[in-house]
Amino acid sequence: MDIKEFIRNVPDFPRKGIQFKDITPLLANGQALRFVIKSLADEFRDKDIELVVGPEARGFLIGAPLAYELGAGFVPVRKEGKLPYHTLKGEYTLEYGEDKLEIHTDSIKKGQKVLIVDDLLATGGTIKTVVDLVEKLEGNIVGLAFLIELGFLEGRKVLARYDVRSLLEF
Image (cartoon, rainbow, N blue to C red; front, side, top):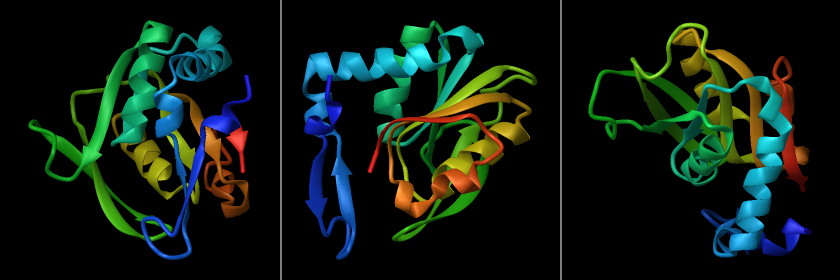
């Protein structure tokens, strides 16, 4: 299946000069969504993943069904102030701003095999922050999975010591 046909380009969003990759057409197509989840799962099916970790919000949309497909748990990483229990906080820079992410301190046990998932790899800042949070909780990061990678932004370089896999590259 050519899943690129389900990715919509939105120019100048969220600000001028950004070419946003909109995955909502893909999410709205059951066959395309199923193909993406199964394809990502197949990349890591033999790795005994215990937890899938996904950042807010599109990481939830890919991560939760991927966790289900792998028979793993799902751990959300949220924007600052959104989680109700004790948290660890990490700060990061986007290609168009700065933000903070948090994870529950009891969400990952030492040595658990973790797959970190998001819809898009751009500069790597968001996922590097998630990686740092997981490592502070002593999770064993088995891989990083993305639906889309913007290769020209070279985010993969920031994550060079990890097994990074993407279904599409722009």
